[in-house]
Length: 187
Image (cartoon, rainbow, N blue to C red; front, top):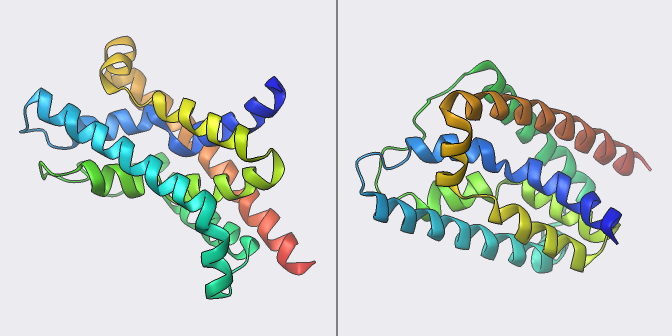
C-alpha cells in the first residue's frame, strides 16, 4: 500500500511543483494585502482540486468525444512540459507571471497548479495505481502548497535552487511521457 501511494505521490508532487509554485506565488499580486493573497492562494488550490478531480472522472470521456487517446495527450502534455521545464531551467520568459491582484483561479489554480503535467499524470496514475491512491496523493501534494511555511524555511535562494531541480525532474517526466505516448500510439 505504501509503495502504491509513493508511486502516485512522487509524479503528482513533481507535476504540481509546490516549491516552484511558492516562488511564482510570491511574484503574484505583490500589491495586495497578506490576507487577500492568502484568500487568492486558497482559491487557486480549490480551483486546481476541482479541475483535477473533474479531469480524473471526465478526462477519458472528453478524449472519446474529441477522438483523442491517452497516448496523444501524453505526447502533447510531454511536449508542453518539456517547453515549460526548459523555460524554467534556462530562465526564459517573464519573471512576474501576472501583476493583477486577481490571480487565484487564473493563473494560479489553472494552469499553474492544475496544468498539463498534473492532468497527464492523473490520467496515467488512475490506470496504473488506481483511483484511491491517485486521489489521496493529489490531496497530499496539494497540501504542500503553503507558501508561508516554505518561504520561511528555505528562503528565496533555496526556493529558486530547489525549483530548478524540480524543473529538471519535470523535463525527465516530459521525455518519459513523450516516449510512452509514442510507443503506445505505435502499438
